[in-house]
Image (cartoon, rainbow, N blue to C red; front, side):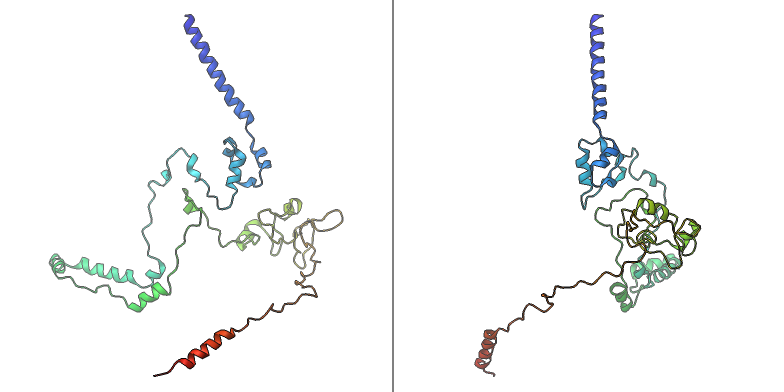
Amino acid sequence: ATEGEEEEEEGGGEAANEVGKKAKRRLKRLSIAELKQLVSKPEVIEPWDVTSADPRLLVNLKSLRNTVPVPRHWSQKRKFLQGKRGVEKPPFALPEFIAATGIEKIRASVMEKENAKKLKGKMKERVQPKMGKIDIDYQVLHDAFFKFQSKPRLSRFGDTYYEGKEHEVQLRQKKPGVASDELQKALGMELGGPPPWLINMQRYGPPPSYPNLKIAGLNAPIPEGATYGYHPGGWGKPPVDEFGRPLYGDVFGTAGAEPAEQLAPSLSRDNWGAVEEDAEGSDDEEEEDEDYVGP
């Protein structure tokens, strides 16, 4: 009985040490807010980065240029592409420049004739096949492949696939700061009126992701006929300091055009020099012409 009690005490001591180690690790671990304050690019931080052995080194590696991120399904418990089971794959479609040649219609008509043949005709066709059934003009094929051929969309460097990527909306045609007619209608914006997020931008500053974006009422003048104010259709309050100077740009439109680059009076735009002709080379050529005797 004494030996059993000793073993239980030893096992309890080991468990307490393990719990103590885990608790110590948690105490030493940085929080996400603290880690974001220590790095130069906090936008790359993910919730599990704080559990790494060296979080600051990890974030530094992730923020380097041309770094390929780890695919996001690494932490998922289900198998990769498990959610695509049972989904019908769309049939293969020819590229547009090949379909424009009419090859599909020609092939379909040939297949119809083949299916309409009887067994005797099919057996005869096997023994003596006819060639040139699908005949397309050479010029049409040449134009299709050398004039109208378009490059397929290729993935960029570091562009990894993840489940559901093909269903995401492609926003290549959209430009930051330009609201489409559908978006203006959905937000209830008046024609030529301010966007609803302008007040918060005047209070907190321009978006950091687009530092050079010109936004009317924030770092660019408002349209003609518009007025500042918080009434319906008003453009809020221009962001200025205590001396009335704009904080983010020419919000009043008083700054003139940027002057063109001017050189100092002592400098000129003339060429530094002229290339000298090779006199020796021309003399050698004349000598060769004199030595040469025609047939």
